[in-house]
Length: 185
Image (cartoon, rainbow, N blue to C red):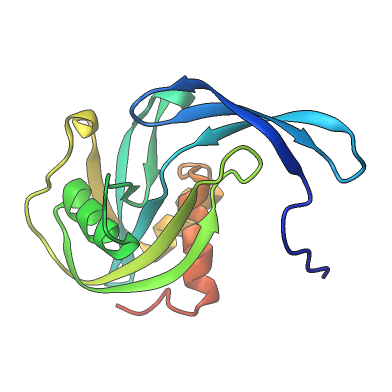
């Protein structure tokens, strides 16, 4: 592997072409190492946390309608909290908001890039254990969300048969497996 430190593409100028409360899109004029010029369209989105709530050799999932793909999808709880002091606080908040679950333990599994070809957004993955049930605190935009618990074998089948297509959830499960934590409760 070659380690290249520092940017190899120089930004000549940058202009925001669209913004709303959740994202902004900018167009950067760039210069490549060979001196040629080009543009990059970059989507700026705040970082988020993804939580893998695990108990009894199974996992809690949430499902909601995802407008961009025009269908309901299953995934692990995830989201961002504006002005959150840390990814850990975000993870606890999102878990409670979306599922009502509270975790006595949050283990950081890793930090990944999300769509690194178009965005600088990152996400932190946490394993939530020691779960206790409570009332969810969903945002208005999550009004159609539902949740369920599935055994580990069913989760894996859902990934294989395309019932779970959220790449972040699948990557989080891979991190859990690679760390050897999939069977702990």
